[in-house]
Every structure is written in structure tokens, then in C-alpha cells.
Amino acid sequence: MSRLQLSTFRDGSLLPLEAFVSTLVHRDESLKAKYLRVSAINRGARPRCVTFLMNEQDVVYCTVLATSASQLLIPSLALYNSGSGIDVYAAMSQGVSAWSVPGGIEALITLQDGVVRGLDLSGFAASAEAQPFLLVVTDSRRTGMDLDPGKGSEAIVEIFQENGIVMSEVLDGGYNFVHGAMQVSISSGVFLIGDIFEQ
Image (cartoon, rainbow, N blue to C red; front, side, top):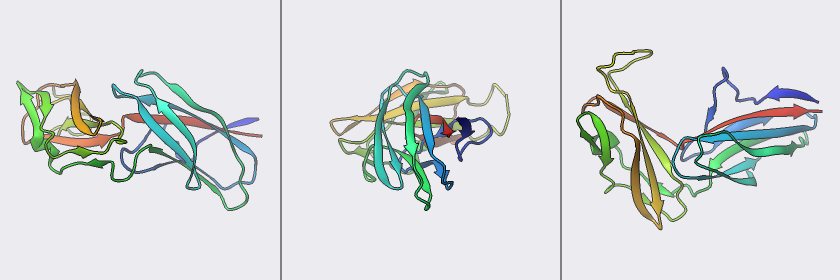
């Protein structure tokens, strides 16, 4: 049995799972019998439920615990290609309208002495099935490998719901942030890595 890389493998980096849409994990067009193995890391403080889909059909449901350690989600999933190809996707186990997230999140962030302390959640809404996600705050003045300690670092805020009530927790407040020079990206907090085994 030989070991192969996922079709989405790039430069040895982990594959980030999108927060609100599905993410292609592997595309296979050969007719050989293969087996998929997938592990994940959860960067958040709460577990995430993830669904793996094969050709748009739900096949595996997993929970990625908040351990910051790699967790084996799929030890061996057989991929039998009938000739039309197989696409394996992963998605957060939630409906497409699980979250309502306002624009201009940067303006909703509360700073104290350059540290992220909180977030105005009045514009956020969630259904009871909504999975947690992360807001990753960076300094828009920092580019590339800029190591200037006078500029803001990285802050992480976890957004989650309990019984449909939206809450947040600052996991890392960062430092040296200023209003008007922040940018926010949304992350599921889940990162995938895997292999293909071919007979």
C-alpha cells in the first residue's frame, strides 16, 4: 500500500476549514481503491462539529475537541470511484443561515491600552445549531514578515452561542492595536491534515 498526499496539500501547511461554507479536502479521479485518513486541530476553546461529504452526501460526522492537539477524525474511509470522480468536502455541521454576522466588525471591537478586551455583539444572531467560530484580529499596518514590535500583534476572539444567545470570549487579546488600523478575518478554528492510502 502506498501513501499519497491529499489533492489540496500545499507546501506542508494545514488546510483551514471555512467557517460558513464547505471546504474541498480531496478530489480523486483514478479508478484505484483508496482510503482517506484525516486529522484535525481545533484552535478554539470549544468543540466543533464537522461533517464530511462525499459527492455531496453526508458520510461522516465528527467532533473536534478543544485540545489544541491533533485528533484523528477519519482513520480509514474507503473511496471507491465508479468512474465519475470523487470529491470529499468538509463543513461545519450547521445550516447556511446559522449565523448572521454584521459588516465592519473592526468598529465593534473594544480596546483597552492596545489590547482587545471585547466585542459589541448586538449585530450578531445565531440559530441553536450554530457552531463557534473565531475572529482573528491583525494590524493592517503590518505587512509580510514585518516584526516591528510597535505594531499590533494578533488577537483571537471566539464567537459562540448557547441556546441561540450569542456570546464571545477573548482567547488572546494581543497588544499594540489602535482603532482604524485593525483588520478582521473569520476562521472556523479547525485545521485539517490527511493522507490517501492506495492499494
